[in-house]
Image 1 (spheres, one colour):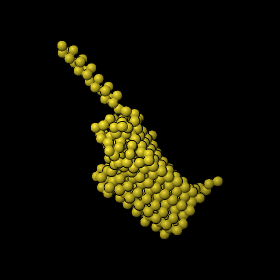
Image 2 (cartoon, one colour):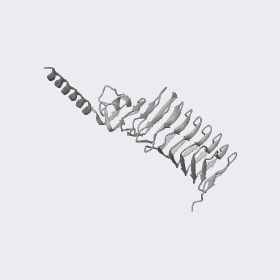
Image 3 (tube, rainbow, N blue to C red):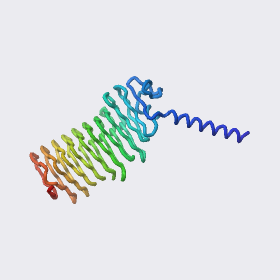
Image 4 (cartoon, rainbow, N blue to C red):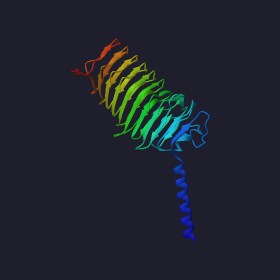
Length: 293
């Protein structure tokens, strides 16, 4: 009888697990008038991203049905959170807006307003994961950084068509050895620096870095490549290198900063020879120039 009872309990647990797994949908929905008690279907949407993520299968998508504020969320599985055509907001007073710290996950965030309301910590905190893609997002109002990334070797972060502004610490800070690509990104009016790099390989292209409190880019480690971008309106340097960093800049404009280019220590600030560095308090100079043929 004891053996039969154990087998019965085991079968029951398997059935419960199967039911929970089958309850997860590959696509779920949130709405400003939803309820997290709902199944998160299109006709019965959830209220928050946190409520929807528990009902969304790994590799699935959470879609925004209509305008609303859908709350901060911790992401522990591969998932896309997508807003198209509505106001899809994350209001993260006193906390991180979106937190990712799970090895191997692939995360896509598209069309979101991530608002720290003046007390939030980091807008997006990406500690571990295989990849993070941020597209068409606005990140603002945080006391630390708009984005904080410590992703390691083999991990990638892509930020496209997005604005990161008005954060007290900085726009983006990367301290991990992973790769980062910024394409058509605006880093502006942040309290310390537009982009801080201490490790990894970073590509910045087609971007505007303007009116941050001290530096546009401050690289003290890693490798940074800059193409077709503007650096303007900084109280210290438009582009600063230090430590062991290597920064290459081409086809870019560095104007109206207290200092245009500033290389310190043994760092390398390499010009590709087709930049406009003018109208700064002190223009500064690269450590070397490699003209394009």
